[in-house]
Length: 395
Ligand SMILES: *Cc1c(COP(=O)(O)O)cnc(C)c1O
Image (cartoon, rainbow, N blue to C red; front, side, top):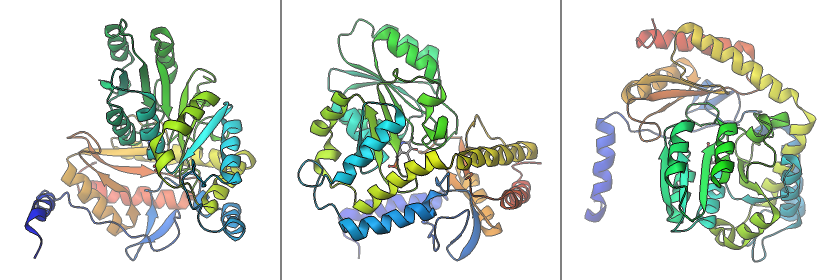
């Protein structure tokens, strides 16, 4: 018998089941590959963030094993006590050089990098100006900071300026914050215009490049490099969990900003640092970004191929400009049914509904990687066409 005090959780789950929104975790039974086996089914995998196929790159695998041999499996402490190994410093220096910034700090995840940074640098008297579709980790960071949060409609530069004018006289710290590439839409932030606004109205400018690192800019340096805005974005967050293929997040900024985070960012202070194998893997990944630019070229060639194929079939792919291409169907139950039938037919594309995306904008999301072959993508398009027609999503 469940404890009475917990019954409300079961009730909530039953509601999800009734609304056909209950989701079982898919279990991956192979490596993370372009064609993988999930729940006993071999499927074309359009759901991973493994943009460059680095999760199984031989160089990264080898470095992880070597680091485990040399340093053991864990760091044994938080960074600020005994958990800063020389390879942690090497990774931070490597990232700072790669991004052409003074310094960087590595967190346990992109999530903690965002949440830990925003909550550390702002307080109750301050204001955050945030795009409506910013990632959950930014939103949580904003809430934890206790600053006032002002949300502007997605990518609406004019609305953003209206807010900035309204608060122009306020004497406080102001943070203008946006995702570089939006994770559910696959579109790119209007960064040049936002940077101008930040400069005009005296804001700290911060960008979350989780889906742009390893994807946009020279050798995958991200949106700041893509738009040539070096020196004009104060804080850049990136993830080590997506294109980089391992796990972690990082913040790039001035030396003093990073030193401040060493002293005040709570995940850095109160949660154990990365195991050496992960750190070594990430260092190797940044080498690969510089040594194998053809991976990023292939990613974009595949992106163009799949996107054009989807559009030709008549799917609504929204505003996507990157390897993330949503297929918007509107109704959440339909999106999940679409995803289920695709899976049975051999394509894994996750269904996504409220609250991850706004009501009425439910979708499946496809993410293409550099390692998908043209044959695999052609086959995926054929399956998408068949199921799409059957469910009357396309004609
Ligand atoms: C995935 C993601 C994160 C979190 O990164 P993790 O390293 O997976 O914690 C942060 N921001 C955005 C926009 C993301 O898509």
